[in-house]
Image (cartoon, rainbow, N blue to C red; front, top):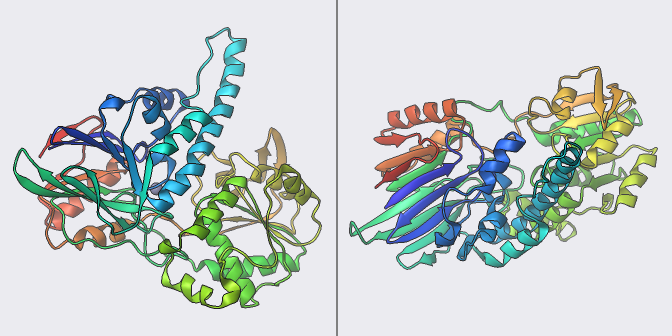
Length: 468
Ligand SMILES: [Zn+2]
């Protein structure tokens, strides 16, 4: 048996790992590498293996850095099954199409420049048609249901509590060459306890070979601030001033958490039940529909809330409006009364949120609420830093609205939570590979796991292969 690491090693993006056993090849994840445009394009386009020789793809979750290169894999000749949880399959159906759309606009912009310079035009990595075609290859299965991937190899998914449908992958392999049974565990991305909607990550007990993520392998999260307490205060303060609350939020995950938290606050009369809440992002609206379909991923507290017949939909209440059309979205510009507007993108780099920020940022009655980590050089980061002037859609605006940040809402386990998970195995894997972390995070995680009693702990380089 052989494992090769083709992405998300010594970095956090482009997850893909190849298992070769019994003459077959199984790919774990097929993510997009996200870096500078040129480097990413080259790397994503040229798969480091022959796609037609891959027999199956096992997918941990729908985030684009794990799933985003699937349409290209299929276009390049892959013929096998793509096996994941039901919810991951459903999220991929919207996210891969969204990814194709982003690439279309990106290439159109690039080609405008290339045309002027007399350069040959670039092609997108894949089109909408390619994305839709790839959906035919998906097979959704439930958590904790063993499923045969290939003869002698079965997969079981366990809830990873990271995003809807996210799974840790357990492969049970009968290795013909060594005549041994091998259990390979891939953590996928690990979530954390006490999330508003999702379950806690599952603790596993046994592994012979372990691939574990290390995004926060060298960092602890700030203590999570109770989202609902802070949300209650910021909503009420903003309403009292007669202002609007503008929230840039990721369409998948954070938006649904916010909507559910607002629903609870309305129910308890902690915020005015007459306050209109708008979700203004077509992708977020689609994703919310998928959240409704997958109660198997909800934790106990959501069921308690839903037990009352009025709350059968955690994401629906009297004053919430999902604005899909451009016209409805534009009408929000004319709102004069207090309201909450949740829109994407999460770091305010693109999408409808730009219009809401532009229209509301100069009014001190309004509040901009930041609910996620903001990367350097994004508009979101400039707002968190309260820079007095910011550029939005090519024009300069004064930041006069109040800015409030809720910290500690990460969907990733931090260092202690990762080590709680690796420390729980009663048999320590004989071979461990640390993936999905910046180099320093992975190296520190490796050290910590050695101290936990793991013997053969590796931090692979890109393209490195190991025989087991
Ligand atoms: Zn993820």
